[in-house]
Length: 310
Image 1: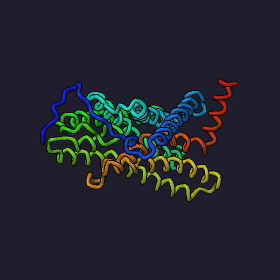
Image 2 (image 1 turned 135 degrees about the vertical axis):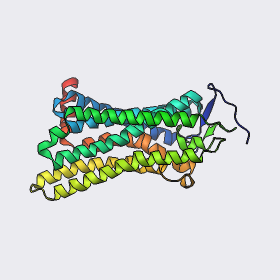
Image 3 (image 1 turned 45 degrees about the horizontal axis):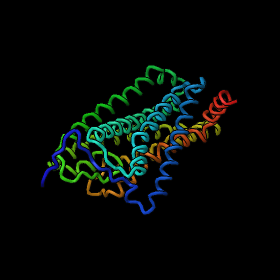
Image 4 (image 1 turned 180 degrees about the vertical axis):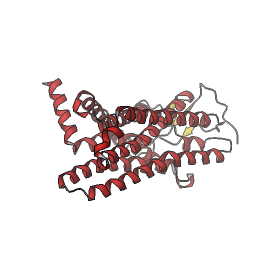
């Protein structure tokens, strides 16, 4: 097959979900609403947790990081897709593609690890309440945050450099919403089977190991909750944990589909829908899931907004 002789100044064409839609204008409007919702809800949650001293506890410090990651994750993808549709310009430079891939992999990997740490936080709070502030002292919290960012960044850097070193074929069209590993490997002129196996191993490590930790934590939490004498305590624990489990399901489901399932089970249309879900829908819904049923967060929002608006 003839190779596409690219340089760093060359680029790709992102054939995102808007190009294949029967109603691109309606879909674009929906994506815009989701992005504005993600911006507003995550910014409000960040403001409430940062400004209200009552929320300066481990659970909410980790939630603040999750909200920050969601805000960055959707901003890496959505504005580019929106402007491409408005300007009818779907190109992205080689360097821009590599940067988008690195940022998306970093933020996705960091959120993946952080959700596992958040499950451990709930385990400590519910199963070991007397030792909770020792288990989740500030130094441990910041170590969890730093570990999430550093490990995800190193993994993303390695994958980005290796993916972008392949020679690409004549077609510059990426049948995807953003620059990600699976659709880019389809354009490679070299044998990528060994690297695809490496991506699979990394996917299992970054997804299934945290999922195992989350399942283990919540199994122990459920056993503890069932033995609680207080109905109010049981209800509060279940509400908090159900919010986290909802977010876990919304994140790990699509991510597992993209990076663990064999490429033979993928299609460009399915991959685009999945990518919209974890880059646009999930960041918009996460802060709502965590705040609407949480009296402490809603109270903090009322206090903070009342202080600065009134």
